[in-house]
Image (cartoon, rainbow, N blue to C red; front, side, top):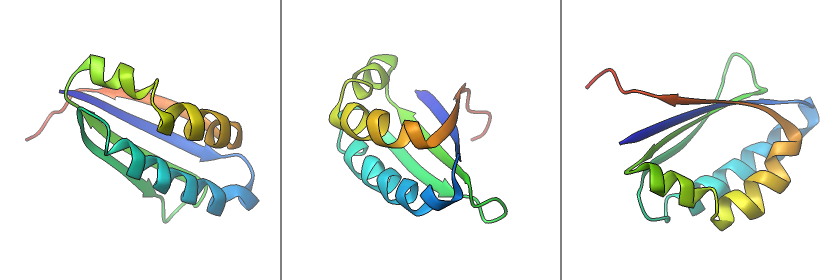
Length: 96
């Protein structure tokens, strides 16, 4: 299993709702990709400019293919990335 968690900080407060909607669509599209076991989007209550993506992929190859799929190449890279600062965290599951 491959766990990828990504922290996103929206650069401009006025873009928060746009980013929120784009991430919802990206998550919907990503969950239809082979090997995607989990793709969740969280929006911080304490800092509205913060989003967290929680992803779980069956294999590293599935994650690599995700980065070539429409959700990533046509939505995330061109529309989300210019509006945010991004910090990815490939992670190991501790529990359960």
